[in-house]
Each structure stands twice: as structure tokens, then as C-alpha cells.
Length: 298
Length: 171
Image (cartoon, each protein chain N blue to C red):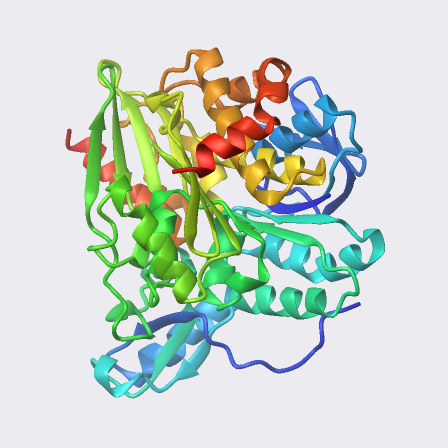
């Protein structure tokens, strides 16, 4: 698995390597970086799951970027070569400045590979993929409801320019937005829409909804969407089929929220710390066919 | 495998409108000088508000480019999406009351503060690279002492966070 994304550390140079976690810092390529924000949170979630299953840790390609796009440019310049070198089965693109030209070049490179990786995008990479008309090159997007509205708006190139009628915050409109996005070729093959109710949709149709346990305090916690992206990425890397991985990712995140007893001031790392407990308690139950049958029979 | 060095048409969705050609030329010099990819273009007729020259930008970088133009006293009319049917920048801010905390949501950004201390306890949402940085700069500070997201950020996510921040200041 290869994870690409920016870090909020302006002087952090381009860093490539297998990632590990030491105390409160991530380490790769001889450098350390924070695990509490954005890409760092997503990497920590994925690493926790690969560690739990005894899998090889993810490779990462990260660089500091404060919003001016310098780190983003470095990552996308080196990414095709790195993909060619390590041939990841799963490629995850995360925080970055949404520059359509970078995504176009990357997707052109990946399309020509004999073994195309399983492609997952969230955050800025998802914005750029949709805006550039490349969403259908991806296997999974993990939007929240406001980002789902963005995917459903054929004219928006960023969630800040979404049509007002789509930005209602009404979770009941999500299935129609999923269908619209898929029809406009603005959706990945599978959408995991993370929110008060999680929707898992394949080819524009809702396959499962996850609404329990209901932990409202997860919404204000920065990074609780990044944790879901890390979870689903690692579960696919572990060998689960995409829909099953998405369902278990959503269930794990919610249950970790239940275990952590969060307030709006809780951190995403405190949620991630619960993952091994959740997987230890529920993995067997959730990997039985019963869960899939129950959730997809709606 | 390497990127092909081909000349691509720059089309990242945003355009800065100017009243005078000299302002557009100055704007191009100032913005390009800071490393942004930009291109002088003729504005579409339906967007023309002054002169026949405009600056094409990556719309996502609106916040940083507008701040740069203001700081260098480069006059401009406004920044708009190139596609004329695109909706305007979202202005709706939704409020959720969590008892001891209040969350303000603007577009894809959410800011939460404690009612009693007025301290920012969390920021969530967004996908641009300045958001994790803004999280580190704002969380833990009171609304009164925290910097405005638009003063530190570069992107549309930062602009949305600024809207949520300003709404919280007024609660």
C-alpha cells in the first residue's frame, strides 16, 4: 500500500519510505512527522490496522505544504516513478492542493501500467479528481455530506462553490446526490459517504447504510473522516472486497467512537487508539456473511 | 516513468477581473512572482466588468491570491469561477448546539468552540493542505485571540473556515 499526501509542516522535505509509529510521531525515510492532523491521521489509522493484522506497513510519500502547493507539486512529480518502482496494490491519495493538471498526468501514467493499483482518494485529491473529470479512474472516494454535494454538482470545482440547493445538510438527500454524481461521472466506483448516517454505494446505488452506534460528538472532531479513509484502505490491503471493507470501516470508526466516550474536544488519535479493541471484539462477527446480508438487504 | 513535459492549456477554473489593463499586467507580475501558475487571458464576455484583460488562476488558490493582491495594493474587481453557471461562493453557515459546545459549519468546514471559555476545541472537514496547519494554529486558542483563517490560509477551504470563524465570533 502506498499513501501520498501533504503535511502541515512547511519545512518538511519530500519524504519516502515505509512508515512506523514511535510514541506520538510517525517515522519514514529517516524523518519523523506528526500523526494528529490530516494525512498523518489517515496514515496512523491505516498503520494501526495493518499492525493489528501483522501486515507490511504502508509506504508513504509526504511533503510539507502550508497551502501554497509546493509540497503537492513535489509529491506529484515523484509519484509516477515511485508507483512504477514499488508497484503498490493499493494507492491512497489524500491532502494536497487540488491541481487538476497534476491528477491528469498521474492518471495517464497509472492507466498505462500493466497492474493498475486499487485507487482511493479523499480530501484535496478527491476534489482534483472530480474537478478534472477523472473520478471514474478511482475505485473509492470517501466524501462527507458536504463533499457529496460537491460531487453531485456538475459545475463545482470545489465544495466552496456548491449550489445552495445541494448544501442543505439534509442527510436524506445523500442517495439522490450519489445517483447524480455517478450519472455525471463524478463518482468513484464505490462511495463511502461518512456522516451521521454512513452510506456505501456501488455504481451509484446505495448498497448499505450504517447508522449505529450513533455518536454525534464524532462530527466536530477533526480527522474522524481521515480515520475512515485509513481504515477502508488498510482493510482492502488486507484482502477484503471493497464493499465489505467499507462497511467494516464505517462500523469500526463508529464503535471506536463509542469506546472513546468522546466530547467535541476529543482528538482523532484517541479514536484510533480504540481500533485494536474494536477489531478484537467484533472482527469475527463482522466478517461473517450475516453482517453483509443484514446491511445489504435494505 | 516520468511526467511528459508538454505545454498544457492552463484551465484551473478561476479568473481575476480588473478595471484597467495596467492593473491586470501588474497583477500577473505580482502573483506569478510568488510562484502561482497564472495566465493572462481575455475574460469571457459575460464576465467582463472592466478591461479586456483578466488573470486566469487555480480557483482553489483564491484566498492566497486575493490576499497577495490586497497586500501589494494591486487593484482588482473580483475573483469569479470561469464557468458562468457556477454557483456563488457559499455563504450559508449552519449552527449545531452540542450543549457545552457550539459547532459552526460553512461549506465543507466545521469549527467548534466551548461556550463558557469561548476556546476553539476542534476544526474538522476540508481537504486543502492549509487546513491541518490552521487546525494547529487555532485549536486551543480563544476566538478573541485566534488568528483569522483568511489571514493565514491560501485556499477555498480556508475561506470557508473563515466564514465559520466569523459566525462564531458573533454568537
